[in-house]
Amino acid sequence: MFRALYDWTMRQAARPNADRALGIVSFLESSIFPIPPDVMLIPMCLADRSRAWYYAAICTAASVIGGLFGYAIGYFLLETLGRWVIDLYGYAEKWQAFEDAYDEWGVWIILIKGLTPIPYKIVTIASGAAHFSLAVFMIASIVTRGVRFFLVATLLRVYGEPIRDFIEKRLNILGIAFVVALIGGFVVVRYIF
Image (cartoon, rainbow, N blue to C red):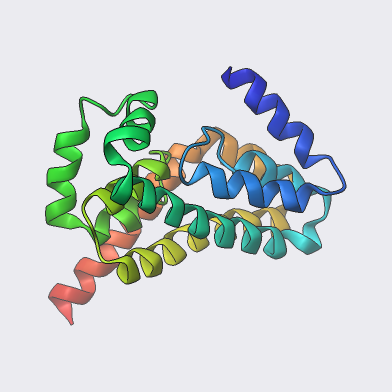
């Protein structure tokens, strides 16, 4: 199943209406779809580097709107569709710990997990389930998704094909480094200034 979805996503990136498909994949990935939009974003940016930021904007906007759908699943449909998605991605056993952490860290979870390979859909559903402030959720989602997609697009726009190989080989390390830098920045601001 995963391979078929991956192949479908890659075919969409090569089509004339790829920007529309990119928006759909970005929307769905924030709530139920397993393939991240990066699979389309990267080849589209490499095909036309002058449109990289346009593609990043599509990913960001559609992902945030899709995040609202995930939020609604958690808020209104947690015991039905929400549990199904959580089980599908293997988070059923981790859900209680995630809810507990969410109660304590809230916005930080949205900001940090939205940048990592941990499924963003779990964050969106948890936000709704926790009845987290919708305004804060939206702002944090715009920041975290925007940073993620615009960083990838900018690197591809500037460096092209060599950066693609670099990103794909070191995606987890780069994500962790960014999160450490983000947290470090907040710690410095809080305790030094």
